[in-house]
Length: 80
Image (cartoon, rainbow, N blue to C red; front, top):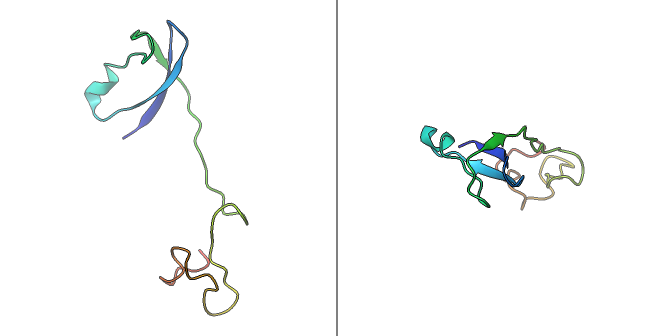
């Protein structure tokens, strides 16, 4: 289900719409003023970086995980 960002031509408010089906693309209206003159905007996206401190990771110092409570460590996926 894609989420698109729109901007209202009437009041200028920006908003997001999650499109559940093809028909929902035809019925987009501003949630504030109900204007149907909206434009789809370019969206940015988030990227997850696997840098130290950015996300919890296994602490692999030897043959076993030193932090088995982090998801993935007990499954043998340590160090991914």
